[in-house]
Length: 147
Image (cartoon, rainbow, N blue to C red; front, top):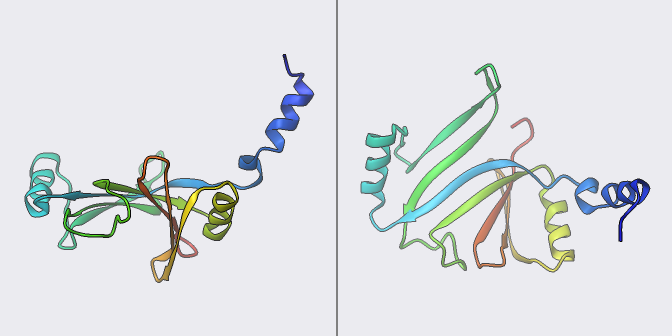
């Protein structure tokens, strides 16, 4: 059955995505390693990533002209012995930027997603987590105002 233009317009305008923007970008990529120091050194030596003492790098955003703009993507290697990714068994976690953490978490719960109860609110922003259907922990981050 074909849909008319009017019907398509109704479907598009009333889709949940049209009501609330969910992910606005990638805030960070985190992964674990058996030997995090050696792996950090490899990335620094061979790919030129400016790995800092805290175990990662902060990639500052730029516009199309290469001028700095608001935003940072974090890249970090942690120890495979850590439990930050729990209950996931995955060796990685992606942090997605959102504009309204509580709104996104509420929408995910209403859609039947496995939203973890823990929330963090700090000087770095607000954080919440959801498990994807494959058991990967997904971090959602609402940056502080102006970031």
